[in-house]
Length: 409
Image 1 (cartoon, rainbow, N blue to C red):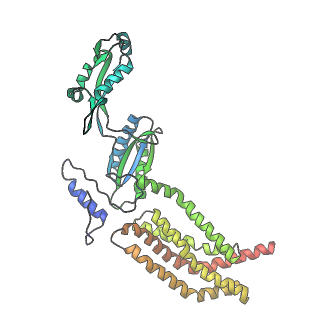
Image 2 (spheres, one colour):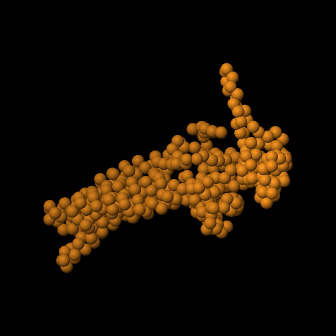
Image 3 (cartoon, rainbow, N blue to C red):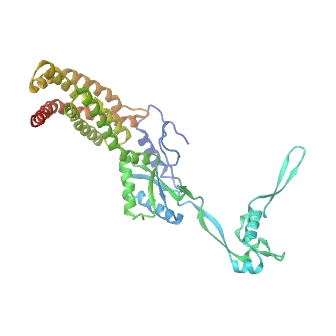
């Protein structure tokens, strides 16, 4: 069932979902699963919950057992809601154990038993009736009673080598026992899927940590593998690659600045403004309760290009004053800080006001854009307060270091 929310409403999607679930849970025998839908998604499968994990192993019974235990453990977590699994869905199955000694004595082979079972329940086509207007297949099958009552299966006649018939119960033991309705496989291994949603106000990162902690608390064996799927799996992958992504961006920036300024030192002065921006972005995300997801990482990478322009404006002017006007490093950077203060402030304020709609926005998709605006806004505020004072100091420090290298060289 698809529910479209009105644009003029009170509360976000998460608050509306929580309010509906609270009312429906009061009805006995009904479990309601709600999740927000998006036009762009990385999930290849849909389910009753927004996030999924899978347990895989060589033994299907063992996988189902631990999937049930993990689901029960997640149900007690304050960070997880709507924990469910497909491991508990079971039906009935009939198992036939052939007494091979008796079957051999009576002249009944395993292939004849297989053929008899297929003829009774496999819808074997034995003939086709052709008419002027159509054709009709003749299907061989057992009486309807044999399909509904497993006890009648023992009366299935089998042909012996002597040409006589004997019932199936003579050469086999027939028993009925519970069995799974379906066996899910991941990478050809039996698997069980566990679905969950995040509790209200809980980020995906904290929910993923809660799942890992729950698996550790129940003592998940090494023979059963826990794997995050869909959006939670993409979050895990982004967490593993985000450090390398940021380092690659910094290396590219350093190479470009080194070529432009023909220096190994001054690009480091410009890059020294980035830690304060990163701290500001992380602080803004932490205060607002947002997790550092893919959108937050994009905001930090954008800060690499926005924040370093403060240092570029000052360093570019100072280097030009040193090389073309013959000024000392202290005079050059002091004059650069005075003359470049206004354009630095103007560009920073323009970027800040551009990030405000992302940070304070509402409507459809606001939850996706908000981490981007928070990262940019927090990073710009902290970097603007610090880099105007730290950049001249770092510039003079690196200049003295370069002078000593040339002196001792």
